[in-house]
Amino acid sequence: MIKRIFDIIVSLVAIGLLVPVMLGVYLCVLRFLGSPALFRQVRPGADAKPFSMVKFRTMRDAVDSSGNPLPDRERLTRFGAFLRSTSLDELPELWNVLKGEMSLVGPRPLLVDYLPLYSSEQARRHEVKPGITGWAQVNGRNAISWEQKFELDVWYVDNRSLMLDIRILWMTVTKVLKRDDISSDQSVTAEKFTGSEPSNNEKS
Image (cartoon, rainbow, N blue to C red; front, side, top):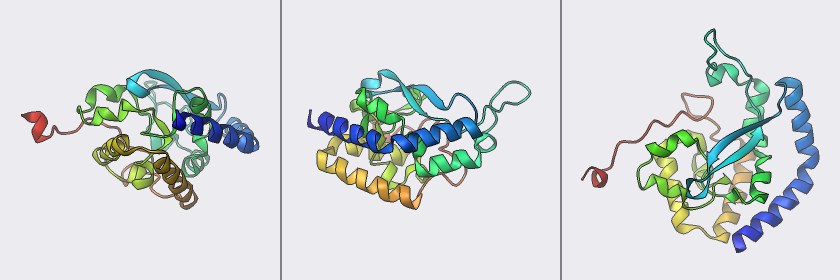
């Protein structure tokens, strides 16, 4: 309950302060990427229940001759990369927090397609609401492996507290200002998760 109250108060204050910024980003997305300015996608929330996450668009709707989307590197514009590096594309998720679908802090909501690929331990990341930022985001973000991210997510589930959330929010501000760990060495965004090798315990 304390965490929920904290989420609501901080989100309302943030939205109030950032309305001019969000309006400016909205108009810029329309100008540089076209309509719609918002990107909506179904993601798994707490207990893997689906919800519609909303962000600002960062990519062009570019496809190949077969109608398939081009690789991220070709669709991500300089403006889109700027939104990602500053995390401005995440601001609309404050609405998801107010609705109770997300929290300010928690494991990032990933693709529904990943659900059957998690190990039983990795799936524990869905024991809490997903967050706009999280322990994995301030400890490597896209510069670390999926397995490392999930270990950090589960660590957060087991050690979560209001003080830890405040610490993560402060670390997030620092990371955003420095624009650290935006992408991996091989990709302009996070590489697709294809599953992990089962641990010795799971093999047995």
